[in-house]
Length: 78
Image (tube, rainbow, N blue to C red; front, side, top):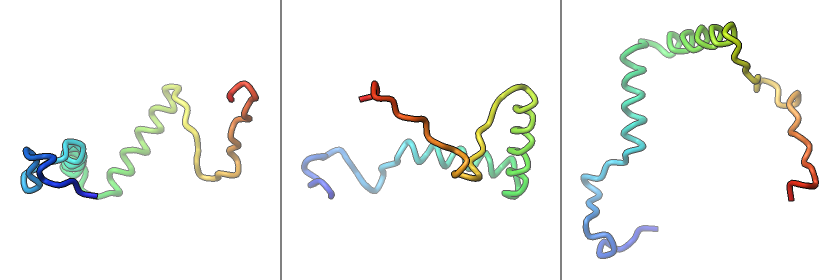
C-alpha cells in the first residue's frame, strides 16, 4: 500500500536507492569479477569448506531433513 506523496515530501521514487540492495549488487559484482562461472565459485566454496573442516570448524548437513530432529521443547520454555 503506497502512502500519499504529501506524507513523504522528500521522497523521490525516481532517485531512491535502497542501501541493502546496493550492498547486494556490490557483493555480486565483486564475486562476478573474481569468478568467471558459477562452477568456479562453487569449487572455491567447496575448497574453503574443506579447509575450514581441517581447521576444526563443524558443519551441519542439510541434505536429508529426516535425519535432523528438532530439539525437544521443555516445559520451562513457556
